[in-house]
Image (cartoon, rainbow, N blue to C red):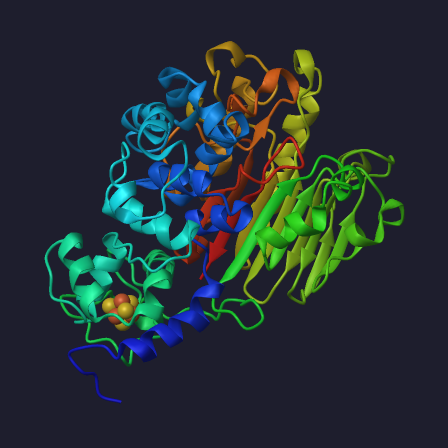
Length: 490
Ligand code: SF4
């Protein structure tokens, strides 16, 4: 098929409708699906401007925990709002908008979220893009939200020829068939984040490669040939998730199967299962579509790891092949696939007063050797609760915790060495900001106040780095004192 200078929009949208369900959903759509609440969609949309989805999701979860509706929002000061939503982009300005929002809604719209673009743009912090998105997503009415992805991709496709998002919105209102209006933003945001990226779009694996005129696109240098990646059944990328569930029997009562369904991972590694498989309810022992592999601790009700897998492994390694004292706590479970190993680890806690630090450091040395040996054979993905925050930005209160278990100099030095010797902390490939945590104490409302630690990781060996497409944290997923972390490989 020869490429025209203007994309066939119907074919393009049809193909994206089939393709995009394999990508991550933009966070505002996710909040709409979860809550169907115009207040939450409006607030999340204000937070999401110039902010990564993962960061927006975390800030929205913290904010909605304190302010589930307009009345409770009105009771928070601008300063409290700033603390809750940090580190979203321009958090101070956004805190000001949110502080003024309840009064503006009361004064102009009798305390209700209005459903038209013209009304919404009268609210603080709401421009046309935000207003269109709220109308389309929260009220399911025709509206075209043009953000940078929609503006950029529509011009690449030759469907519009414009220089600003405002001009693109006007042009699309004139020519885009109305049935596409509401969906086009979600489709192109997901597509723009995953395939048609602003820098180096993946034309080499794009489902629209035969349709797209690629106007103004500098082709990305195709990656060097490499052995085929183990792919998810029917998919092109592989999604992994890791979660310390802090007791599988406890979390099973909180809807673990649904929470695992939200993660939609091809490989879901869990830690601290605190149970033998025969002690588990059926819905936790077997998730639909997965095979489960277990490594419980000898002692019942303690430690233990497991992996739910949609892929058939070549081999499963239970433990590290070390002496009994390192193996009896069920801490390291490894699956081998054609082109990589997945190592699921729950590293020991150093304990108060660092009472168990010598054991932990011995364990970590064996663990590092184990991972490095595997990396001589093929790519290695290491995930799990490593029970160490790496740097000061990885916990909320570094000064008070210099000698605490999980942040002691010896534990940090070990992780420094692990990372310096060839493993990469994948989350930091994408995010250099503080305020991103994976564990919060149950005490003192720590999670609500985001006084947390980042101690759960996905790491990959240096040769595997180029396969990393995404690494994130899902603080909005509750059920444990840890939240899941994710990794997507291409
Ligand atoms: S990735 Fe390339 S081929 Fe696909 S839509 Fe973008 S520019 Fe076109």
